[in-house]
Amino acid sequence: MSKKVIIIGAGGVGNVVAKKCAMNPQVFSEVLLASRTLSKCDAIAKEAKEIGLPISIKTRQVDADSVPELIKLFTEEKPFMVINVALPYQDLTIMDACLATGVHYLDTANYEPKDEAKFEYSWQWAYQERFKEAGLMALLGCGFDPGVTGVYTAYANKHYFDEMHYLDIIDCNAGDHGKAFATNFNPEINIREITQKGKYWENGQWVEIDAMSIHKPIEYPNIGPKESYLLYHEELESLTKNFPTLKRARFWMTFGQAYLTHLEVLQNVGMTSIQPIKFNGMDIVPLEFLKAVLPEPGTLGENYSGQTSIGCQIKGIKDGQDATYYVYNNCHHAECYKEVQAQGVSYTTGVPAMIGASLMIQGDWMKAGVYNVEEFNPDPFMEMLNIHGLPWHELHNITLPHEY
Image (tube, rainbow, N blue to C red; front, side, top):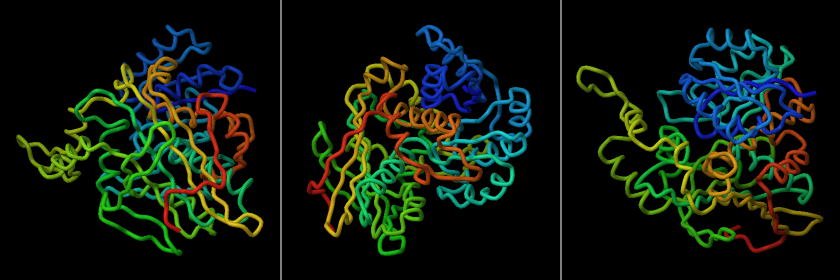
């Protein structure tokens, strides 16, 4: 039976989630898009109507920082679940409102406090007993990375390894949006993420490094070699917890030289700071001001060329022998724009959120409590990736570009 869903957040990812849900009436009976800025929701709903999607997207205004406003919205609309693609700062208020109104929950990025560039799952994992007692499910990190990368890892563990020992998640955006400097998702979150200390898991502990201090060229399918930088990424926390045989787990992401040069200059002049400063008698946060002057990620889709390539490279043991496995998706920005008027980074995050919601609605992934994607059967999710626009490819027992 199809169910009603509320999507919170009308940025680039919210646009994709709303339209992909509206394409699937067999799963979603109603789609409601809510955001602080109603005009953004209305513009997405209008586009969905113009391209002839079978479900008409309804819109509402809501401040996701306000639990009472969220409770009022959920009480009036009575959704089966909420897909949270708002800001990571708002995860906990939305989870609180879901608990208060008996609504299931899904997000694509873990909570981080607004006043500190730090993200970890502890705040959301702490909701486990409350969701369990309420008979509700919260699915965390159901985008691409985190999200699909966790499903890829679970799939590899289920089908191809007796023990996984080494995991390298590699993420390349080889697209060109034609802007001098722009981020592919929320600039504030993106810049906070890459300017904090890097971190990876090795031999049972976290190893911290200076931001962007470890890098090397990695070959990406149909793209070629791209300089890739070791960052901390949130899925490493849940994957090392849920797959304790991992001796090492790392995350790599590509950045072009122009991007890095702009970022260095912005850091040097204090524009990436999250500490408030006085300006004309007002407190302003430099990074929030920078976000306001940079291109909105949702507007980058038109004329965006090239493709993304994201995957997991794993080494371990199968039947007593060393085994390697590489599973990945390549996504073309231009094809995404043609389908849902979005660039590829929004698409690769939004489609998995729709798939996770579908599996919850259909009962394939439904269990009271708070969970990460790798804790469920990966097979139906992997099947739906092929159906809904993110086909994956796999390579076995190849030489991987890492030291072991």
